[in-house]
Image (tube, rainbow, N blue to C red; front, side, top):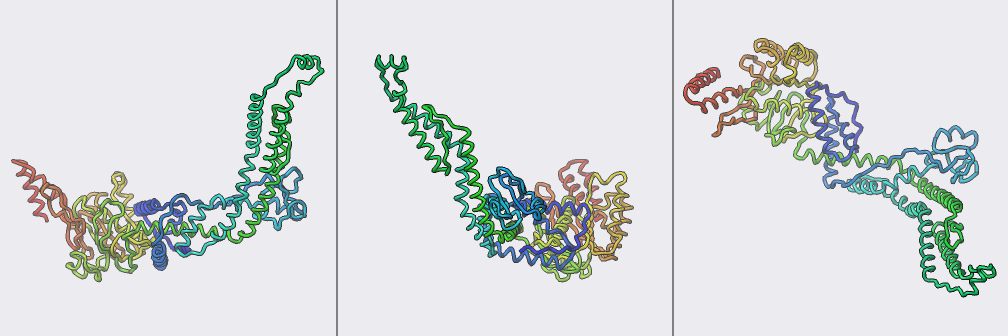
Length: 576
């Protein structure tokens, strides 16, 4: 199962790289169904230890196989949470030597004498307990929580059994099923007062029916006797009174059978009412007896499954791990695990994670001598195929910035231990990754000094580094930019860094150790839209977009304007 990922040295990232990392993590977490899975994903932070990366790859390969036939789990899955709560329905009686320990549990009153429904004791009073523990004093905290989450346990059991993981859940569920009777009984007891009042309404309804059906005829002599108190008018109601008593006896018999309590709850009047004192006494008696019965039943279950509780915790951890892997497998469909190798960063048919319908791109940084089947790579010299420092040129909006982002994505996913969105890849693990992107808010007053400090920080120390720069020349005037970039490229080469710089100054930087790649806008289509091949051409300066834009405007113009644009276009072509 999920290994303890080693406390490996984390990958160092500058803010722009970290921004992409955060975006990748958000993308992965969005695919997770459970919050617990999202937390587990955070274990896959990018690291620099090759052995650790390979260990993660082996783990994921194995787990992807195990979850291949697993279906998604529908509905909520809630892990039992065993939170200690104070039990006000019981008291614990202990010897003086155990008093402090008993009080420290903070689960119920200790050595307090009063009218408690449940008295637990280590001294022989009340119900004897075996030890001073929450499990023994308040087993309901554990057992009733498991009972409430039994549907979740069923789902977890199903998943674990499908992937061949031993689980404690079947045995726990078997024991929990025996509590169904006591749970249903509790529901009945909770309805005690409601049931009593419903019986009172039934008695009154039947009395009313009897009175309406009864015909009472008084003769004149009987009226005189009643008025002179020599007769009893009440005799005429004897039949009704007897019927009322019968109804009351029957109702109290039903209450006794249902709740196990004997009580004279109804007043013996023609129109009966409830004796509230007797009702309260009966309620307390019922609750006391039930609390004792419930405690003993639940404690018996707790004693039988107590040793399985820690394993239940692990079962849920395994479940969330498996569901995380299941979602990772679905998310990484079509991805491949990269080969880890020194000296080269290479990917074939890779696709940017955050571009809709991205084109497949293949690229090589470093020693690509053994790389085969990439267009145009084999046509350049052996020395050029080994270059670690590259200038990327070409059309505006041609995909240069997207390529830098793709390189970062592949490097991060690799060092997290994940597969990458490519058909094939070889990656050299880095200790530090830097991405310097062009931001409008950055290139202004004071930006030159700030950017210069950031660049020198990236270049000033030794280490295994990948440095990616998007349009360095934007921070200062072209002349100074050429000199500075030339120096930075030379330092990167001398220190063995990988460095890719997007620049329009490649023709001004004639450095023998730098390879120049180009993303070409090959021309204009019939509707005069730019035709861009986003696959970089190795060892070739990319045709700039301005030339093609001038051509497009030229072809759309007439008259004198067209003549002016022809001169501009010829100037472009004369420079190329």
